[in-house]
Length: 130
Image (cartoon, rainbow, N blue to C red; front, top):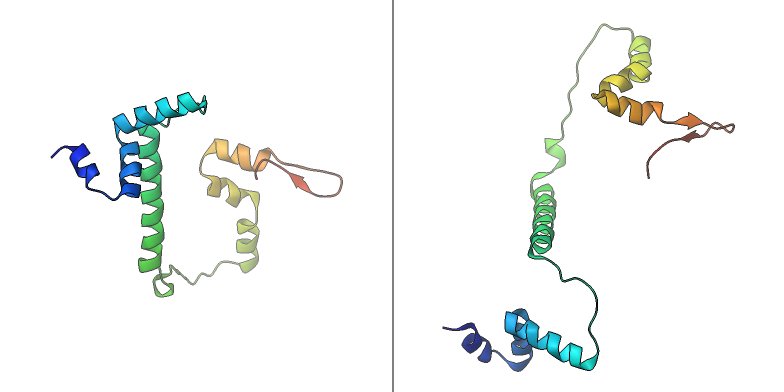
């Protein structure tokens, strides 16, 4: 069955919108808008952009649904251990530049995150970011 015969069976408001989705309907709209002087210089959205937008939406909805259904407080990661290390030495290591170098993993991230900032006269740190 041809698409046009399927579209003709739809109610009038849906039929008008459905014809606009077909190639012939888009050409008709372009001719009508050009005749009315409503032609815009904007580029049409490419099919690749549409697919990327739909894909991003699907991934976002999937992540939100997964977090809603599978994320719960009872599955929270909590790992504890007992150590004989000096608590002051641990606090100094985790609050120190050495830990940040380990945390950054890549050398360019160490330069970007730690070496790019500077202090002003008021003690505020100025660096990249939002």
